[in-house]
Length: 333
Image (tube, helix red, strand yellow):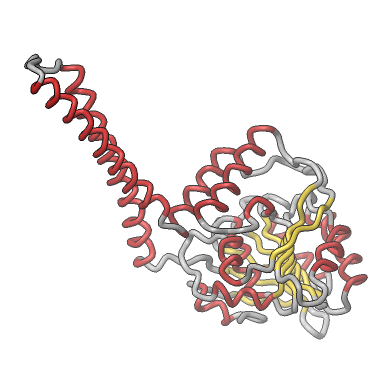
């Protein structure tokens, strides 16, 4: 199989040379047709300088420089749309995903049984809080979004490039590659792999950002919060009916004592909370609709770097205002 490896890069100026030094021999061993796409996601350090230099010096390496930080999944979408070969492999830039494990993912895709394979670590990669937050996000994806393999999701994945047709219309700033892939196939598998410790710096995915990502996915790809708001209003209504029935019963039985301020205040607070939560959920959806109507792009490519066929360094400035315009660059669809 011919292979395109997509790597979103942020703050990885020191790890990219080591990653490429290990990755390229692996790719040469698994396929004569291969490429590496480095997507620099508006990194504030020298990551673009390093990535573009690698692209000019190493055959089969291309680099994209996004005009600002759009987020890991948006950067992945940009790279996936640039892929030229049969299979796309995505991995992190911090050497936590050993390149030597890529043949395991590709072997699982042999034949036509599977379309998507996740590399699942033998052991937890992170601390307790981070792992708990990650498991919670995956459980939410499985329950609310209907992603069957959500509990096995990993950033180390391999899938057939044709699967990207399932998210051709994916636009806007809130992309999620795993949800989009779930639209295209249910033939998903997992492979146990060994993960390494992060070799440099700290992960940008804190528990807080993972929770934020979960909220983005729930609101952006599911109507579950709207249903939850309806259930909350229904529950509050039942509580109100029960309280009303209790007051009426006491009146019929001759107890005409008016309930005190505490009871009234509690009822008002209960119903007000239900209303405000429901309005807040509706507001989030309206805000997403408004944001989509504004035409915010998923990503914009500032410049590219790669080695041309004659061995000389080539760099082409390019702008991609939205996923629909992704075919304007070399190798794009």
